Length: 394
Length: 245
Image 1 (cartoon, chains in turn yellow, orange):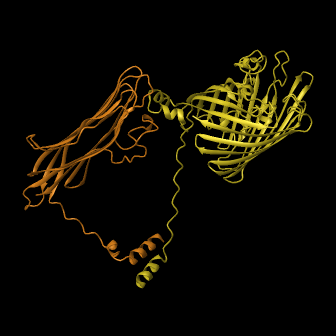
Image 2 (cartoon, rainbow over the protein chains, first blue to last red):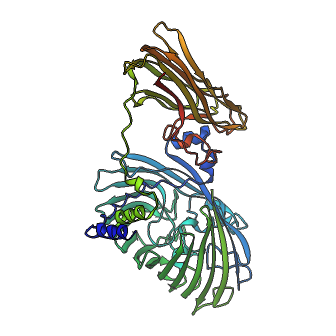
Image 3 (cartoon, each protein chain N blue to C red):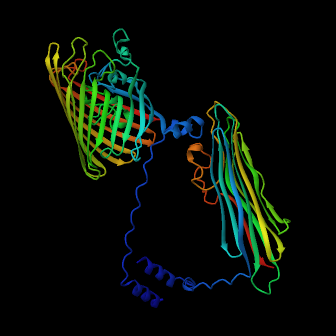
């Protein structure tokens, strides 16, 4: 036995460690298939959709917001119904994605509908079902529909490092927060998001210059407006720096046009500059900073209206199913043209995002809003809310 | 380091010395099979909302006295709104081979034929789709005069109306005494899936007798009854083995 042991030790001496195994390449990313496509899988309609690279999907986002306001949380938008349930988004998405790994041009489209939801009253563009905003004795219906995004898309892989063209009604490309609920870490939205444009109608081009740099430019009909007499030529552009292995990224965006309120049509034409900076402290901890400045001239009784917003987001991912986010925002509505009440809005929000299943997200949050100058929250300076929503993807 | 640890374990285990003993080479076979010409085909037919996959006919000789012929394929038919759907995949093989007696003291050989089929049959409760093994696996060895020497046949299977079936059949070896000479293996197998036209959202019926990726997962339900099934041995396989008598 001892001889064997000695022999073994002797054999091991001088042996080198096996070279480390070469890590396998990451698996190809496949798009998520939600309940509707899974239910259609194996049927003729499902085959038609899959065979043409098309997908039908959506989600239902329902929330309850409790708070110190009695009937309305406005000017805190989106989850504005105080102490009430709200079906914020019942979203239907029909799309054919472009193939960015292809070597030849590919074509696609996307159609997004809020069908229905309370969010429509904030996102609706003038000229597209906008009569809903005055349908209830001059007031908006509680629930409505909004064809919030619909565009045709073409992708040309050989132009630069890829040129993407979109034509139609398209989400605004600036900022951290987004119109679609699953893209946001928190249930509620920042004032900087609520009181600035949501969608554009026009032609938008995105060109990837290098692995890190990309630029975007668009010719649009204004902000939050479809085909309407109040249309006027506007431009949008942004520059993005996001190295693939880097910890930081920067997105600088502008929306520029006349910047002049249309008194005849009573329509806002804001000019906006927005900066987003992202830093990844670790695989679990990330930070987002957004700063926005906007102005508009020719506003009745005000002249030139200006507003400014700064938001800080800190997100910690505990597990792939549990993350926590805090948001600190300062939004200065200098003349009250945006929110209806001037002053500096300061908000603090803390929330969780829990995913018990891949298709189910539960987002509870606590939020406090304060305006030092005026009393926008039912004649009070402050508003405390405790809210939660469930997003069911299908 | 791993190597030395393994060596240490071997040394400490009683009887572990056998692991280090070289395996004695097997004796040369007294009877061998020489594979000759072959006429083989896999014929798909499709009408309506259908899919066929695979269609492989693999002839292998793992040892001089053994020939293995494997047929693998898939047939799927779903509900087309305007027309009936039918998918079939039919296999047919005529494989010539010669049995050679390698040693002078061996005068005759024993030829054994063994068959097995492994696969899945699925149908949906709505719509009336069906999946069948249309031609049950069958293998026949013929002599030079086309006279049948030995036959093995597997049972038929079919499902419909929401039935699902995992098939794993094996036919015990059939043996026959033969002389050296030329012989032919005739092997046939066919799969079929049918579905009447329907406007309902019916899942397709499928006969899956091939390893991945012959059946695109998008052709079967996401909530399929055989999720996670190991498919590497799927197919109809016949093993012909010659041994000294």
